[in-house]
Length: 126
Image (cartoon, rainbow, N blue to C red):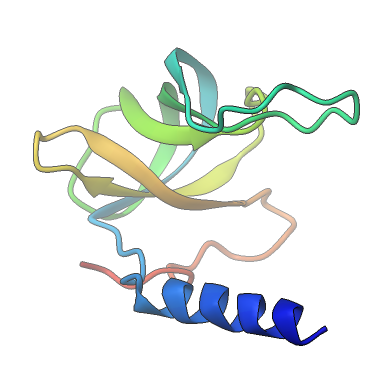
């Protein structure tokens, strides 16, 4: 029990040292698909359906620009994928431009019109 508490304490202090995510741009849209998958977790896929994480390039189709730098209606962004995206699942997508100029998805939440008004409160602007 003490070992478990110590492990939890180390994990939470390590997570606390990581800087919080911030965004340069935010859009309402959906992920149309992904490509260039690169496995992050080197584990076999268990029968439970849990899928290993992969780093991928996702095609983002925007409905509206909510904040930050202007982006095209469709563009590629880096992301970490655990399941295949479902096209037309409307999401508020937070993006941060990487040093090489490519946007990366730093966070998202589902944003159907009846859920709640789209407000940029989940992540701070960079």
